[in-house]
Figure 1 (tube, rainbow, N blue to C red):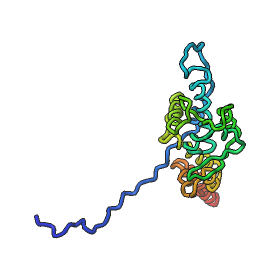
Figure 2: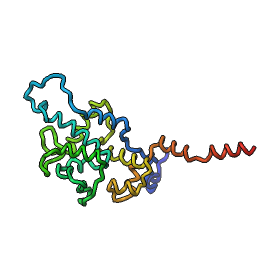
Figure 3: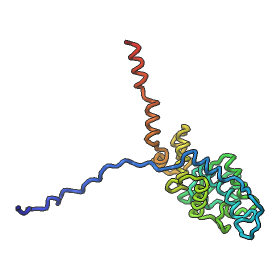
Figure 4: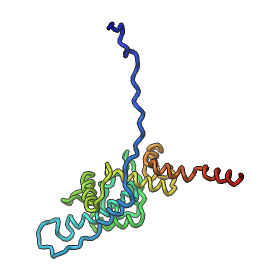
Length: 233
């Protein structure tokens, strides 16, 4: 066996990566959202509460969590707000006629809400001070994104559903896809989601393979062409 005079790999260039299919981010099914809202109803105690534990007291963390859970799901679905933006909301903002937040990049933006979501936020705010945090953790302090995620996981456990990866951010994808399916133009969705670039919005509104197949089948002229050809025979 002879020796190679030169390394065959020298100058060959970089081996290109294998092509891969872009994966669509997993999000919520509508049934999952309904189940989450279902477990946010008022608590019905089976017997008189005879305990000094703070979480079981009237108006305590457990009862507060029911209000917070409903408000959290509604505001995420309705507005596609980022988790950090929700965590920074104050009671004063919830009571304003127009919700203005500090968005990504440090600029102010208006967030659009339906009357139902606005009512849920105002109920959660109650009569608390304007600068008080709207969402509170188990100890009554301002919620962090991690605390909101923990709240959502407890709700999912009660609702017996499996959360998608990045469960808070997945609501942004859900909202964008619902808007797109309703016929809303991508340019409008871009403004509602407060994206700087339309290409970012189009990542959120990308259809799944089954949805693409359904749209293709609905728009394809093949069936109509064959039927016309058959009638002419």
